[in-house]
Length: 395
Image: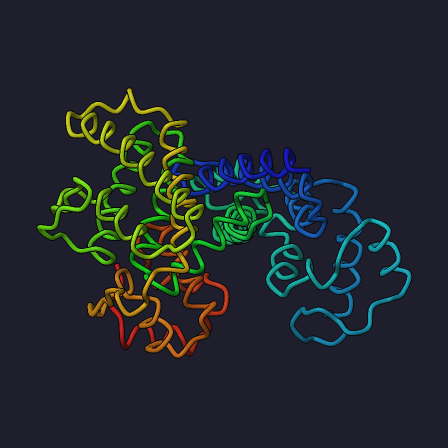
């Protein structure tokens, strides 16, 4: 099952890239959505995609139901909508075809699929896209009208993108691709978000970078790890002129300072030795890679090296979590959504802690946050959006 989810995530990313490209094909995006949702057993989304692709198994059933609704519309002279009373035999046919009526038959769906001028239920997204250049030149072809077809394609593109994004977020950020490390990562991320959102955000950015296919991103991940350790050392064991067991603790000696903090704070010999081992490993790797990145050499930094450094960073932080002092954390005072602390998001937006955390995670995903992106965060409603516009600045 894990292999299916990995393959689905790859297909979803390809679909989003296709839809977000100015020259991308909506039909290809819908095909990607169909394949991914089928792999993930998301039957409702799969059926929606197959209807847009013109699959007769689903189009015929939906077409019959829409015809009945149109006849009812002609009798009542009221706008098309989802009727509370639908013939039971029709429901049985749709159920056998695997169609969820509540999911598929929204007002917009019914409106667009029932009008001949839009292409209706019979014309797939492939046909609509292929015919669009002709309509742009001639405006209509006796049945299809440019404005109506453009509205139909826009609806399919918008809805397809929403479904792809929903699946992407579920796979990428909700732990559906699970492993032992995911359990550790979620625990560390959540605890750090409570203790120091700035450091937590750096950590999530580093993890995001090592997952990239771009070699420069791997180097950036290591640079982020180094900045994170320096920030952590500044908070836990500030630079000083002491010398302890031949170790000094100057500003640039962040490994020594973290090592000494552990020596002073962790009473258990085994826990202390393990934590210090992680710091020593990170220090040697980061020193080596820092010299390379300062020279602009990125090819010598492998994804494996970067991933090992990030993983050891998570392990080290897991060792330290019980010893981090919340009172030492640095609070952001800038009234910008991109830099606000977890506490500020929670207090100023008057939202639950888990919603504030979701906003921070979205901020990492988008390398900032716009109002439109904030709207997509789970738990953010109209009141929160209005308040956010009043108290924060956006990208």
